[in-house]
Length: 141
Length: 141
DNA sequence: TTAAAAAAAGATATAAAAGTCTTTTTATCT
DNA sequence: AGATAAAAAGACTTTTATATCTTTTTTTAA
Ligand code: FES
Ligand code: FES
Image (cartoon, rainbow over all chains, first blue to last red; front, side, top):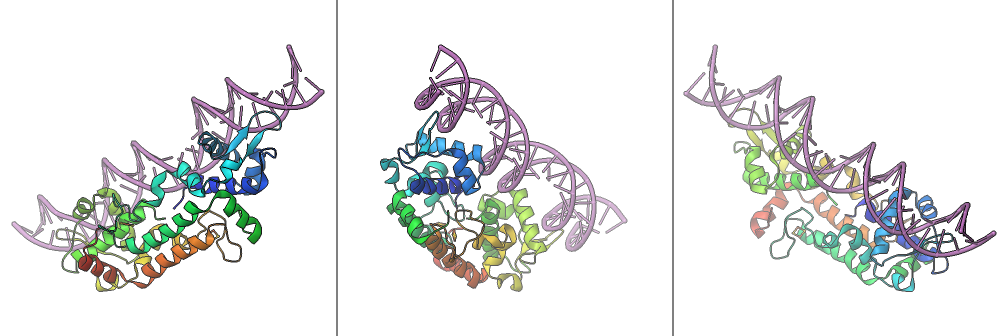
């Protein structure tokens, strides 16, 4: 479903959501150590997210990455689509050129339901909301 | 979710299910032309499936690939697991080392439902049953 | 019994994804 | 101002997935 890059990105954003604020930044190394993810690789992903205004950063001493209020209120979907592109949620599970209920593949019905459920969730819930669950329900990131 | 290899394999097996029988074989080229898939690549996938008794073949003139009665009655899941390995249906969607309801990731609940639905389908229905739907309901392969 | 057709096997090639390293820029603090 | 800390940018390397090519084996049929 998601590329490794995307998995790393989602986890990093959720981590930042409950660890950072505009005046509580965090460096790449802390994130990558905590999530057990390759550091320089994660750095590039965070930069990509930063360019797309889904993550914020400040350079220099005491700088680092963080989520602004605006960042926290984006649906998680945006993070996914920033890394893996918008087709993740619309592509046919068997790789047919187009996925449609008019011209469905044999797995379409099941695959569509699945995808929609997932899409509903990451499309409706914001980063902050999902991160809140992580804290409250003790989920693993 | 599935690798390209796996997508090709699923489509090829379903195609063979309604196109072939023990005395009605089909060559790689026909399959790859029909499905618009790279021929030599598909050949290797079919050979892998053949080694695992999910597809049958006969060499020489008038030879080719086909599905035996036994092949048709395997659940489609076996084809998937033969190509992509058994973890496709049990891996965490965020790449955490293990997926479990005891120690769930933030997307676990939704992801689990999706995966299970899909797994139920390909695990219970046989190749022949799914192929029958393809014919009856005019699905695309 | 030879020629041809097809899969099987294995070697090789290409492309994409994942990961690392180096240099540059920007900000902070002394 | 100068030293330093951090992200940004870009080049590079490695690994994995995808794809192709070549040779061998098996079977059929002329
Ligand atoms: S057509 Fe294949 S998943 Fe929709
Ligand atoms: S723990 Fe991530 S999908 Fe189950």
